[in-house]
Length: 266
Ligand SMILES: [Zn+2]
Image (cartoon, rainbow, N blue to C red; front, side, top):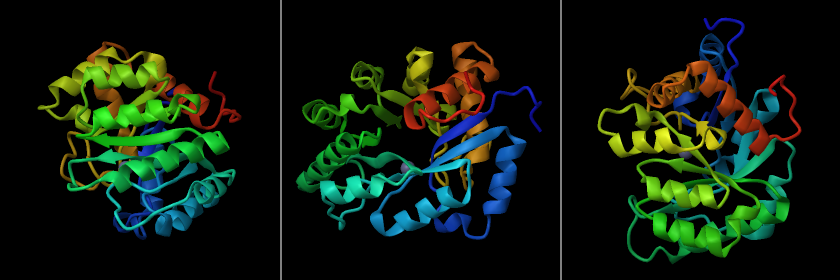
């Protein structure tokens, strides 16, 4: 159990609607409490699954939802008005996850770029920030972000294996950088450098549950409670306390996604 003075952590990116968590939500929430994880953002990856994601945020005060289609989902086209309409729900605090992934898919990925543009346009239309996934596609991702004016709404780029140069461009566009369990892996040297360099007021932490469980749980089903290990590693890399990382990342999360939220965070 964390001491009462612990500022609390937010898992800024998880997939609690996935089958891995069927019937396990009670356990998941208890583990969050034990680890001082106060809130979580449930991320949508396809519109078919969105009602379940939204349901989590409607049922629990400390869960929020996003709406969007992950770049790996090939079949689902979407219009800007449709996305913007779904995003108007008060429990929906972000558009995504969207972005580009040239690692999992190959061939003509023009549809992926078009759909990414549609997400950015919808975000601008409803004034909600973006959750952006990018893998082996940083050049196109940053170019489209610039072309579509993504900086006007801002958001977060999930840092998987990207380099410091990519992070710097995303930061220059006004975006935040989020770190997952990958930053705890031994072979994540370049990413550890990024975690040292990102300004504290642009830093977020996430689990991407059920994937990417941090050390010492690597290979297991990831859960939001384990975001503490991500924050601990970021703290170690920066030479600051876990409390300082918790305070900064929580403040950043609410400023970005839930500006009207008062949780005693100053
Ligand atoms: Zn994800």
